[in-house]
Length: 232
Image 1: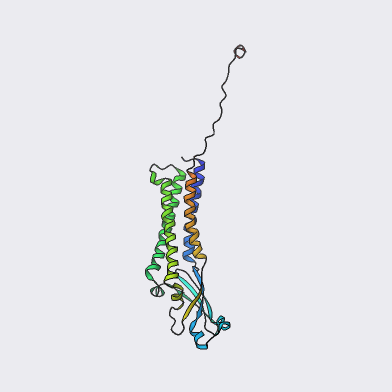
Image 2: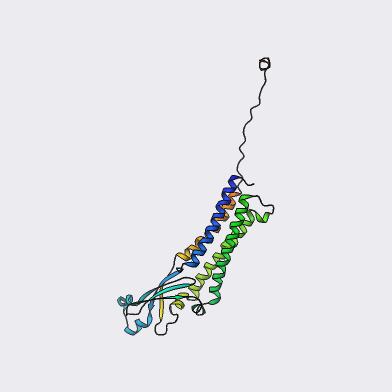
């Protein structure tokens, strides 16, 4: 049985893995990976709008991995519309990259659970095989954190190099052309960053659990028997 010191750290490691699992689920469910401002370029060109008038043609957009929403401002007031990524919009995007992001996050979900299971195993007993011990916990956390980090990097690549927001904003637009004037990452994106950070923190936790504690030695006083004690 592991000592109380190691049990506490392994318990913390299992909680961090489970929290990473929950964070990924939240990031997948909440459609707030990125938000931005979109300019109705067609409306601006039609009325030859100047800088002070451009505000009337700037709308909003936000989206996640499955759905999103945009507000069109083309000079006649805002028109709000919601959209879903599947099954039609994904064909206008980089389909392979988008599916890769989803698969990496699903893989990270499974690896986070495996990491939690290994931490619980080490908390209740000392595994016979070294691969099931602290090294195994570190391995699964590296894989899970790496999968999340790759998903985050892939999403950033889709935004920066494949003009993801512009493609989403112009989906099924036949009359108007929209230009992205501002982009910012939102809570779902940063939740994924926190998930990867949890796995990195787990590596530190496992390393701390391996620090040997100093043994507390109790001084045993030797009993001395004198002649007076025997007579007594």
